[in-house]
Image (cartoon, rainbow, N blue to C red; front, top):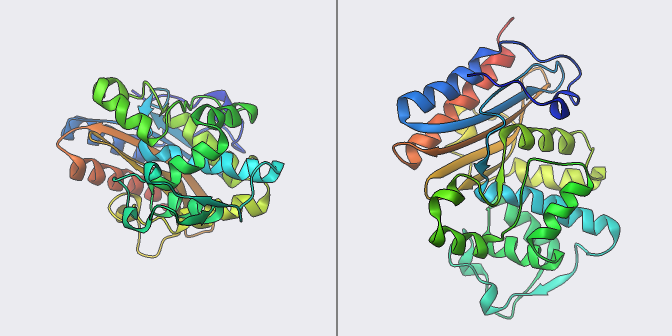
Length: 292
């Protein structure tokens, strides 16, 4: 089944959506049908407005993709003067997350700037940095409040990383399906469009986030595995026990851009989900670079 993008996303495009841009949709369907996994995909070519989605309005677990909205909320607070990038925050023993790429770097008593935490949260998907930043904002609800104030819908943030871990122990299936910290592919694509076009933050703040996404260190087996070597990608991944995601912007050879949000769950395992994400990224790339 092919879902048409909602009006809120289509309004951001410069032209009507392509009625049958098959490649990304077929790739997602193939992954779901042959691998036993469920995939949600939303893709939009920024310059032409061609767009398509598969399960685009279904809710999926964001996992660490939620760190992108956290970064947006942090930079919004900086612009409003309620937070400073050079502010140093003391890391306490209770703040340290054992699951995190740079866990060993977080020593109790050390002081880390907000700017540094935003960077490692996006580049390395670090959990300690994410939760400390969420606390600085006033909790998960403050992140969602920022999104709502900017007219963003379809993205729910009610838990930080520790809270998400506790919720998984109570009802893993509900969490994996996005009951909390969930988003639809179309909503995430819409957020990416507005971020890239400067519709959410000032240019310096937008550039800071995009620079970190360009240096994403967790996407080698996902988007980047399906794209030509050296392709410019701005993305953020997310991983949970049964979920693997990647969302971002691809810079195409002609200088135009494709926004792509891919959420997956279930299937034969993490490697199968990553292969599906890579194949979808490849299909999206080919859809917008092949002669029409």
